[in-house]
Image (cartoon, rainbow, N blue to C red; front, side):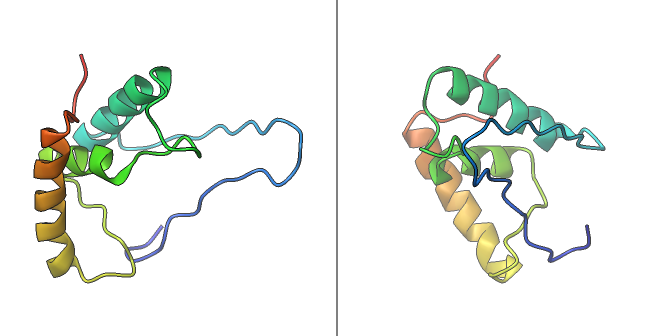
Length: 100
């Protein structure tokens, strides 16, 4: 995937179960923190209705791991301070970038 390509959400338009297998490489600090936090919030029922992170949950992960994952629809120079502020707000709500 090249830079600037938006993510695609996998969804099931039918009634039967959808099974998806995926591989993420290379496994870096962001991927490990993302997976750790996802499992933490999923098992506690703390994700949104589509079982995705809430904005304030993802900001500490992005900030603390110095992730280079950007929205395609907003300039990066604007996203950097938004992530920093969002991470601070997320931490105030008790969200972290690791759950050991």
